[in-house]
Length: 125
Image (cartoon, rainbow, N blue to C red):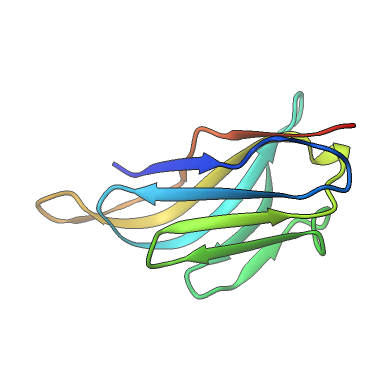
């Protein structure tokens, strides 16, 4: 089974920076897309940024120019560098991995739409 573990969430002042990290494990061979989503209280979960194995990135309009997503395919990790943070960035941030090819001990299989447990980011003075 695929496991995603996030880290890096914290309380930060407006204008500050944070770096979120996510590591995927579970006898993984490859991952197609990895990304970060967030969910604020009373709101739906939304895409923040995503990156394919080839390096193609997608960003929500609200974070363009402030956030940068990156990944290490060999280590199955994805990071989110967040700069110029605003109070409206406050949310639980979730790591996502889609189309994960892994070896279960007998054969190769795929898992789709895998989620981490989330990490809290609070932007407040």
